[in-house]
Image 1 (cartoon, rainbow, N blue to C red):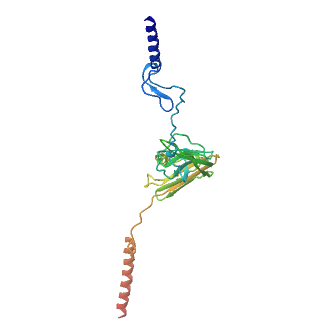
Image 2: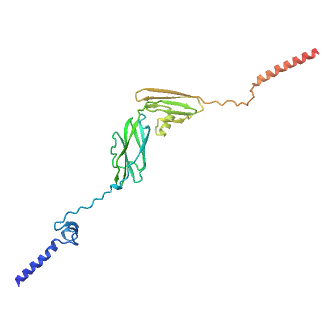
Image 3: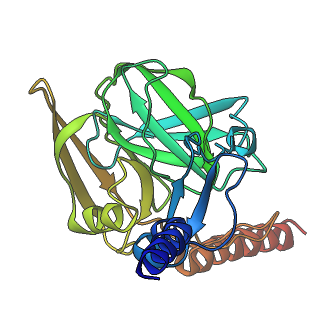
Length: 275
């Protein structure tokens, strides 16, 4: 009896042992593994019987990345930050599946502008760039990634000093390109500040009833000095004239009539005596 009990215990325990050691719910998958939900392996995925390691599929989203830009252009003008340099406005064709654009203006053709969107529009302004050859690099991006970099060449000509100021009616026109320093009437300086410190523009005179001299001077990057004085004289209003009529001084008119009367009287008196 004792032998039977021992044998029964061993046999029954042997039958239960696999389920205790490998406690889990569900069968193994085609890879030989399964998700364990009970026992010490709960919350894990593991293998049995030499099953191969499961590799999750890699989904390629590259085909959802936006298309690269096809063409672009740029314009430039004297920079308000440095009148000897340029601000460059870049424009390119809009890409429908792009949510942003990463751009750079560098000395490297096709240089990667980075993975941060600089603008959501198809235009960007680069400030204060020296004369020379530059490359404008652009790539498009969205939530799935970035396109290839597209670039084109930007050539900025050497800025020559210009100190030009003249009066047109009651308006002062000026061009102070590539001047490191200028001195001008305060109302001109104030007007330039209101337009972003642009070296080119125009401003109306504040006083147009008094003759005045307006003095301008400047110094370019090579140390050459310029000076210009504008002489303003208010316009005078002429006396209106009637077409075909003449204006006579009243005294001159009286004298003329007196002389005419004397002559007339002399002629009449002479004619009477001859009669």
